[in-house]
Each structure stands twice: as C-alpha cells, then as structure tokens.
Length: 396
Image 1 (cartoon, rainbow, N blue to C red):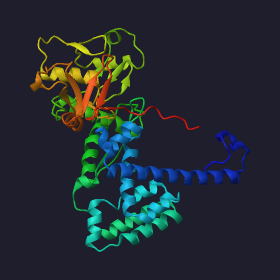
Image 2: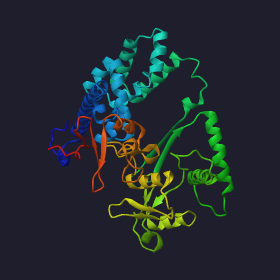
Image 3: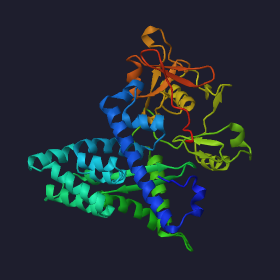
Image 4: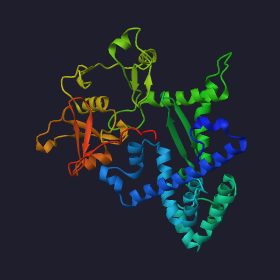
C-alpha cells in the first residue's frame, strides 16, 4: 500500500522505491479482491441479493455498477475459493491475484469436479500445485498447469458438441460502438468465414484502400443487413428484429439536431445526420409524446393493438424498470400494474416493462410504481423500498 501519500508525491521516490510501492499496491489490491470475493460468496450462499429481487451477478451490475464480465468473475471466484482453501489463503494474504483465481475456476466446473471424483483425483493435491505455481511462477505457468490438468482429466478431448467451442462477447462502449470477441469451433468457423468472405469478395471496388480488417467489418454488417431485410429472423417478443431509432420530428426533418439527437433500440446514441441517413431507406412511424415523455398517440391506428402498446411501453421504459435491473427490452414482458382480473385496463398508464424474472417477482409480493415525474420505484414485499446506492465516493 502506498506509504508516500498522494500519487503526485511519487516524484520524490527513487526508482527502487517506486517499484517497491507498485509491488505493495498489487498485494494490497489482491487482499481487497479476496475480501470482496468472500463477501460476494457469503451473500450468494445466504441468497442476500434475493432481498432486492436480484441474483448475485445482476446485483453486482445494478447496485455496484460492475461490468457483466467483472461480476461473473467475482461470483465464479467465490465458488472456487470454497474448493481450494490453500489458494484462498494465498489470495487473502495478497500473494495471488483475482485473475489467477479465475484461471483456476476453469478446473472447477460441476462437470469437471464430477469427472475428477470418478478418476479419484485429490483436490488437495491440485490445490497445492496451483497455489505453488500462482505464488512462485508467472501467470502463464498457472494457465499451462490448468490446461495440462484438463488434458489429463479428459485425454480423449471434449465430446464433439460444437457449442462447447463457441463463445461470443459483445462489449458496448460509451459512444455506442461495439467491440466483438469470440471463439468458434472448426465447423462453425468455416460457416462464418464462408458467409463473410462472400461479401468481402463481392465488394472490391477499384481503388479500394480499406484494410483486410475493415473489409471484414463491412462484410459482417452487410451480412446482418441482408438477414434483417429478408425478414426471416426469429421475432423478439412478438416484434420482428429491426434497426430502430427514436428522434424528434424537428431534428429528423430539419437540418438541425446535435450529435446525440437519436436513440437506437439497443441503447446507442447517434447524431441527427446519421438518423436522417438511416431514414432514407426505412419506415418512419409517427409517435406523439406527452409532456412527461410518454407516448400519447401511435400513428393513425384507431385502436391500440398489442404490438402498438408494446412499442409504446418500450419507448417509454427502455428496459426492465425493476430497481437495479439492466435487462433490455427484448428480454422484457408488459406487466399490468393493476391486474387485469382486478379491473386493470390494458393501456400505457397501467403497463410496465419487466424482465421475466422480475415479472414473476412482482406477482409474488414485490411492487413497481411510476411516479408523476416518470421515475420508477420498486418496493419489497415488506413495504420497504429498493434503491440503488448513491454514487461511489472518493475515500478520504
């Protein structure tokens, strides 16, 4: 832990002292990560997040503002430390990082634990080996040891289930752009390459200066465009998948509008100019909004049909309204605030967008309520309110 005071004071340290401080700070971070991991595991064992109608991962995302990946690692590491006490002790002491514990988590899936038990594998020995490597060797040595262990546990390799080798992660950035990272098995990869490469080869204009990576990116977007235009994709909650943009009529019609005038269906914000570009080849629907931002009228329809009501609720709520939940619209259902059997009407004022889990929670004692200012509030069965924590404060 830095003993020299503020970060700016490092100018007075020698090179050796700075390196010592770095090592001390890493050890301190490891100890804090270990403490956090044990707290998360204790909360999971006691089902504490259920008090707020959440699971461990969604609680960490909604209440602690962690990314999905960070929340998953914390929950997974907590389960690992229960099986590997030596590694847990080293983590507590600051000798092992959360990343190293995460590598060990690969070994301790329920399926692999069962396979280890069948082969008579001693987890105590595995614990000792992994801990020794994590404390005394480089990170890559821990990775190699885990791979070696997995190969020994299953020398014939995994069963030929292609889904075991497929992963796709979509990471959205603050500006709405998307980073894509994934792995495909050999057959799945061949199909993907064949589809994308067809667009790459079909789009080779004279003088093209794009890099190979840029052409592959354009091809992937074109593949998605064609699939959406064909109309054969599965529906998302009764609605055909489509590119949606919400923008004020004035910004769309006039040459005005700032860089954040349009809001897309998956949450990205785009400029009015880009929204007008999309509208050149799209269906434009009129939605009249009230002073509180709620849709009042949907186009020229005389009666509000199911699909129109859902669209109105999605526009207003933007996703699950349960406190701490970040589920998107396509995971959500339209809930009657006053049950239909109790006389509740099927209209916008009596509707709320809730993911399947929280829709069930609301039908078992929890309650959501929309205030006059448009904000949603959530109440527990005991009548106390669920609220997300205030912004994290800088420690003095």
